Image: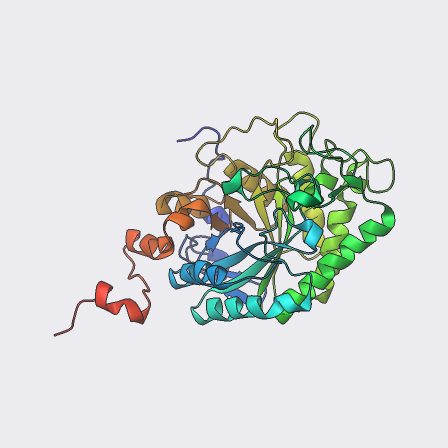
Length: 386
């Protein structure tokens, strides 16, 4: 047993067994049980984490994104999340990022959402602004910073004029008017996401991107109402959340992804993350998608199996809010243990779903349930009755 993982409480204490006070059976909660979030029901606790494909042109989703995301819905995943989708051209990580800064971006995304829903999954979208980590090449071409317009780059912005890498161009520190504009961009992106038919929205405040940059003292050295104290550093994330929640129908859930720690002394940490999660819950957030790191290139991250799961547990218990666990989760039984043990309510699978689009169906098989293969695949997975 991993000593770094919070131990599971008695399952009866969080309602997995009979609820004697109501004299009725409470369904056991496991990886394959449904998850109710407001008026949306996920068919199981398996979600596809948002993963950038760097394959858009001018922000437009295309056939690659349709097939990539649609195949995971076909493969039994309950929630299929579109990659970090830029709320402005300057908010893209790379020139190949998907965007939603104009009405013209809606129709291609609507096609994806409709197909995902047709396969019994829920289509979600992650709204993002990369801040000082914008204007880079795609990873497969090196991922280097695009420092000039001649290279295809653009001016990046941040809470303070502190670059991500020391030799990067200095970002422009956002003034208050520009910060108000960022809030507007997220609201407009959320409106377009709803118009495209997405049933779940996620605000990206993790991995060293703009909203995380405001949270961390390492990247935020402002001396106004957006810097210094914890309340001030949380201000932009909470403003964005409140604006997005205000325009969403009451039956649709809202997630926020955070990095629970910078993994460095004096930075953003788990205690601050618990407090932020309490405030996000009060603002109408339904689940905290718990990741870590990404704000400092020098951070020493102890990457290992389940290394982020204890953060999910701390936030779930400390803020009394549902959480999602993510990071190096590859085995269905391990994922099930995370859910049944009370470490998280949802498991977000990333790279393993890139390697195996039908991971969720194989999880059903692993637990001796009849996999819900599409009828079109019956030739391969069903025996003839005669």
